[in-house]
Image (cartoon, helix red, strand yellow):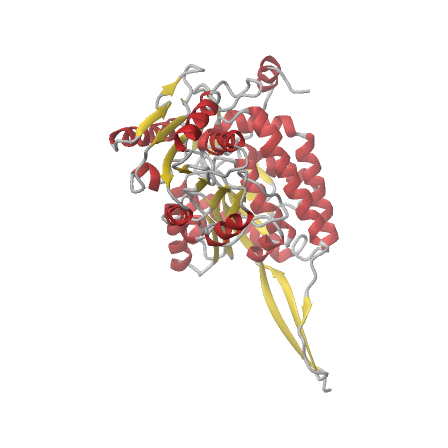
Length: 498
């Protein structure tokens, strides 16, 4: 049974907020003694003063990770032993689900019901699925003649630096940590300074599950002071990142300036959602279009932020999307079934509002919203916003806003729809709504995106890879393909001739 507002509020009052870094299995302050305020966007109050790690802390964490890797307690352990620990961690995440959901909601503003049902649940699934895969991955034998044996084996990469974003803090950390740890690596995780709490709690639970000290280190801090030293560190073998394209490009430069560490990025998106006149249900498609952009306050890398609609149905369809959007007003995140919560902080709120002003100035028609609202005093809330008659080259149609702002553009035929949809530097996701199975396949094959959803938005689970084309990044999270990022392939040739 779901909790009431008062029950969530009472539970939140008992929370202990993790605030120290975790290095070599110990909770420690930053070497400088500095802290930063962890502020809840729900109402602007300070939740905790969190250790503000810098270069010295990063170095200590990397050294700890290297020692643990070289020692071999984890890296050289049997797959079945690693599986047992990660399954225990999944069980602990599930056991502490409500605590983690509250931390996530308070820290970055999302509805606590979504955090519980989606973020924590998917994180549990991630660790469970990945743990179960560990002892089912086989190496290979090359096809050779009788006089030699060719072995193809996977080895852990070594020390992994992981930098994760603020919009799905626990889940994005899980997507990186589960396969990295499963393959025997040691990890230094830098969560976003905007939402570090669940990463710190996850590290505590990992130790409780039996992960050896030093295998997972968590160093909260800012990008320049903590993220950059991690990306430049000469003893980090692999770097994985989810965040903006601009930062992703800079991390590639850091890898080149240092030791050419393997670098895998999941970056921005400006995903097209294409609705043809023969969509199976305009009602369902309109609801999908609204939830595709307004879910998680639009702070989703795969947000359906560009809506392309067949001009024959556009006016009718946009009216339906507006109707559903109007129902998705932000509320206090503890409100049962709250459709939207708060944006992550004041800076992001001002960024979104500035894009809304640019949309108004571009000549597009404001069909819904467009303003800051105050369901909770002191919070960061923006109402669902829809612009119709947007020009393809408008800023709001080209740049990632990362907020609840939808741009609607009409098209006349399939060729035009495809051209407009692919006219972007990004390529993370795309959606197609049609009854025509041939058209669905044609569009899916031609859309330059890592995920294509037909007749719904945001499908998929741990069994399928996730990642982008073009400037949306490289490499893949989830599925067995994720293991490629955290391993080296070795070819060993043995002469059998005696």
